[in-house]
Image (cartoon, rainbow over all chains, first blue to last red; front, side, top):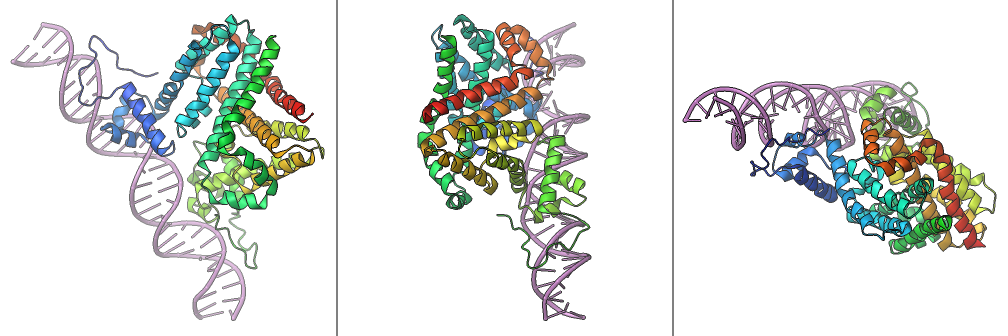
Amino acid sequence: MTKAPRKKVTQKRREPTGLSHDAIRAAALELIDKDGLGAFSTRKLGRVLGCEAMAIYWYYESKEALLDAVIDNLMEGIAGVVNGSARHDWIAALRRVAHAYRQIAHDHPKAFPLLATRRFASAGSFAFLEQLFELAHRAGVDDRTAARFFRVVSSYCNGFALNELATAQRSGEPSGAALRKRFARVAAVSAWLEPKYMDEIFSFGLELQLDALARTMR
Amino acid sequence: MTKAPRKKVTQKRREPTGLSHDAIRAAALELIDKDGLGAFSTRKLGRVLGCEAMAIYWYYESKEALLDAVIDNLMEGIAGVVNGSARHDWIAALRRVAHAYRQIAHDHPKAFPLLATRRFASAGSFAFLEQLFELAHRAGVDDRTAARFFRVVSSYCNGFALNELATAQRSGEPSGAALRKRFARVAAVSAWLEPKYMDEIFSFGLELQLDALARTMR
DNA sequence: CTGTTTTCTTTTACAGTGTAAAAGAGTCGC
DNA sequence: GCGACTCTTTTACACTGTAAAAGAAAACAG
């Protein structure tokens, strides 16, 4: 529970520091994007914010809580995607959400592992899910089918994006080339796993699942 | 590069300490299984091994390298699964590997996130991939198809297992129940996402992909 | 204007982290 | 005995998250 600044009457008074929930979590995301999750620390964050590390703890109970807020920040864009979809086409909505989710991984490769491991526990995520399932309901998809396909599709998206990042991050490793020489078949197959094919492969797997959903609903 | 103990002539001489690559990584896995990844440290590992933390660094260049070895340890079981499959049935092999992979997540829930984020860069993993793709080749699956389906299926398995763990780990959170009350549709759909359904949902999504593979090969 | 309370921030401190560098021991071949 | 090599501990450093207390500044009450 964030012991947020309970406003009595006042709102803004102390401008010089400029600290706030939003400013802190935005700076946190920026820092993670730049240096990576492993190098992120409250002291470094304080340095870019122009304050001591402990000042952050008045806004966020712990580093964990701050990271949860960053997650919410990343997920915010997704919620809007559902609303932008056709009113009664759950398949189209799922497709749009899937692509938007993968886009987050591309836009914030260093921060994405946060999402991948601890999504969907915050209030913001629940609001998004509610809209998505509401749309499913309107489209005549029963709860069991919605549950199954959401789990299957979201697992796939999550795993795919994580996979993509892992290989992208490790592309510079020298051992990879050496290993590929010793394993001929891996080398041959890997030729089809270059980044340029990723868009197509992702869509291929996604459509495969959405086709099955369409068949189920028909 | 591990600056491994280059054996000149001797093999075992100093038994009292009992340190070795295998002993260390086995103890590391045990410790991670017990306390979780976040609480794992070289000093604690030294404590259970009966040595100072720095002794570990003669066997492993860094904590990172040690964790890579733990990953290899976890993946070792998988390699055997491929060999146990029918000689010319790639689909069956993929199915067995998928279930074995998910089983790792169940057997080592606390260590699994390691796998999920940084698999398939070690020598052991490459050997496994070579066998899997060799089997695909024998079964008449072309490289492009093998690449596509391996990527799709492995992404799905990875994401699914990660998802399962995340919800299992968070089941005790009090905020979850409160949130579900505010979001009726989430609550209704979540009823179909209880752990008891997970086996079936996992197989459902997996077979959906394997069916598509069968269609492609026919 | 004065004194008190509430809202933020810094200071200080502590127990823990990964690991570089050096020093210490035990064992080998000579 | 004497290096040389193999393994382990010691010491040290820079860094981490964050509890506890002190400090400062603004808001409010009189």
